[in-house]
Image 1 (cartoon, rainbow, N blue to C red):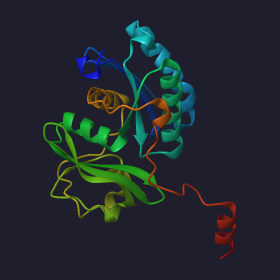
Image 2: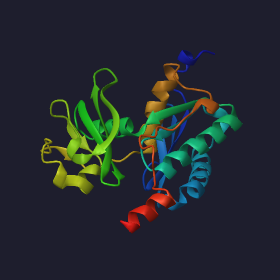
Image 3: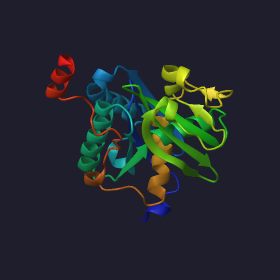
Length: 235
């Protein structure tokens, strides 16, 4: 069977790039999901939620076609958790992996919530910065501005897209240069959108072997070294 012969692939999805962990199962073009808050517990809650999801659907991993995951950007620990779990499960079940950019998943969620076809997704990156990207939907998603990391005040949109994500809530005072007449600060990455976008990757033949599934990190330095902290304290 070729990839393209699977009209409605069965996709399991994991998303842990923010404080909300979620898992989803897309089957016969219908998605079910479970979610749990608490970023410190993602590595423990996700396996339990996956087990509950399979029980709810009364299927097992053997009936899945691919495993999608939120590849980032996002919380360093969360993105690493999603990638590690996806690699382990996909490798053990001999499934391809579909890494989905979390900002694109946010754009998809915003579009379904009525944002229109021009969306700028913005996720709090802490340290006074945001992860952001801009997308245009025209018979599928197209990248207008690739994912990047910057201070909120340096976010430069193309045109007047709808802005979504919790970067709005954290750095609203730095975003007066954006058109916020229609904004969606509540939009966050979710496994249900990861599943649908992962299905598209799978159908286009763009899923990868588990060993090649990699996270998307935009910040090279997540924390200061001990020496840097000591140097900073002494100044």
